[in-house]
Length: 263
Image (cartoon, rainbow, N blue to C red; front, side):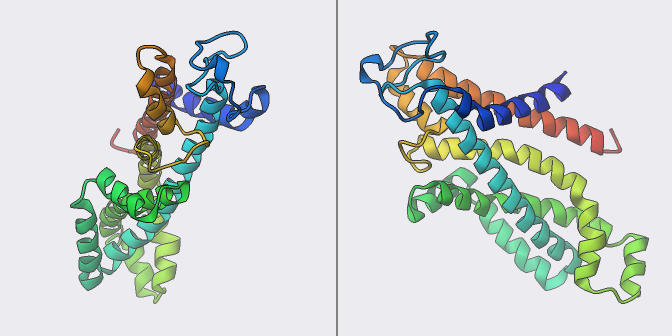
């Protein structure tokens, strides 16, 4: 059941983010102060926020932000981490030792604290959120790929290609890195969930997307002041984050089960 639920949740979220703002008749930043904190109604299915803005429209705008951050962070992190990890595992020696020490330094800090520090220095913005999450995100892919390459480089066909005088770039590009794609794809699927939570956490702390742009994290931050008089302000974005993260986790687990020959 979870194998199907994950992709369905992801596809529905993507569809809502792409076509939802076109179908919803309300502007995500238009204010109607007399209707502030109103609950769900026919004209506003999810209610209104503390400034009288339509919560459904802002939820759909936040979905775009979350998906953009997830794809950007995972794409760049996977690319950088795969290249660095492949070089470390294939070359070994001094290169592996230097790269290993850099990864150890980054892993010595809790990821979210390092991201908070980077965004605090660079300034709160969507671009800096992506940069901060990439800075801490590539390490996981590098460690994974390095471990895979340490085994792949000893295989007979790789040794034969090296004996024929193939260049380093050709061996990595054509034979070594493609063999790591299955493991990287699983890591990337699970990494999407981590990137979405990271963006929501930074935005919740005021270090991510800035008003009036909607983000699920900023919506949670605004709603915490109205937990008792308008709980829908917190429940709606909280459920959206939980469902999308579960969707990516379910998809990653299913993908791992399908690609792992031992399972």
